[in-house]
Image (cartoon, rainbow over all chains, first blue to last red; front, top):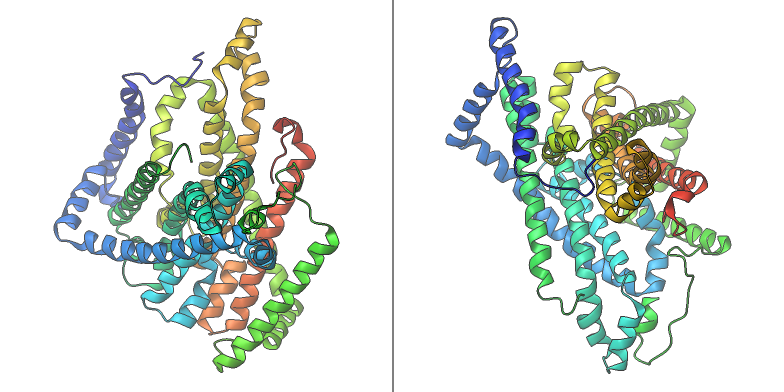
Length: 257
Length: 279
């Protein structure tokens, strides 16, 4: 038995075996039954993928989905972080808001789609609203946790060095809670993708979610798969960006904050 | 807590409980919630009047009457039972499968090396993105909806189980080996007990995403369930019905989470080494 998680040099060979087996089986099975079912093989999917990138249709859908996510995510994160700092620091405010927060965090964003569409129309606003909602609560909850995780002695130390309320805020509370807020943003980013897909399936004429659902109606299996994998890729890149952001912000955090 | 320190005058902060979670006396909690509900209802009524279009922002009374009507027709109970049933089945299968797969990956490194890249690839694909493929492969029946829930639960539990296995200190494993434990003993005495709390954390996250997934799946393809209630309300512009649906989705999620936390604290406390489960 291996003790620690050792990473071998030829890990990718081991990992590539099942993938190669699956792809090969899929290709052969698809080729054998093409006349009967018309299920595309992996090579066919790749060709379609290339074609969709070349004619710009895939990029247009990605563009639309990403814009919805980024606008909503930016607004939601800003709202969530501000509110989180306020609620984390003022107990009376938190006690007043606690019941609402505890209730709202269990309402999946997508369940608000009917309300969003009726109130904000079927345009961009309803989709952006859902993402704002998704991001706000995740960032809010994590920021509160971050503020509460600040060791009391750190606050005391700042106080004994003569920090005023404002300095305590800018030099201790904000830098100490940013990391938690970014954790919240990472989770929120994942949830934002989950929300936007369904929102676009239910109430949109564009975006990657619409691509998947629309291709289902035309039985374009290759396009469905391309939509799915594109989403996976975008989600991965977004997560990578969030991790980079956390690391680059860590540089500005003094002394292990 | 924090606002003590924000005051300009230096003051020793009030020491609250040592446990991460402070229990407000029940009376205070009840008071808080009663106040919250009243404030919410008043704000709702005021914004409804201010908006002036009862069809778009229905007053409290109209929504309440809708709720009574839905209860009387038995529709609300039916939808709640469908949604709960789907979540329960999918969550159970998914948790068992996720934990099993995660532990297998922890036990046999070869499986882990084979599967880990795929786990890391598929975790970024939202469950509902698969719906078209699922509908093509499994039809539009119950199996399709439940398999979506299984997918979300598996990924959450699996990722957390793997994190748990990685977190076991190598010194513990070596100590067990030094004391002459064989491979299966190491698994049952060290790896498994050390991973349980991570599995439970994963299950709690999975429960949340299971609700998210079931609502979305019911919105896309179903004839019953709370997701269907909400999406169906949109067709009739029945804001009151949608509001009732949203409120009950929230309550159901809240209840399920609290129940899970209660069960964990009641039966799985021994896996937390006295630190409390924070659930």
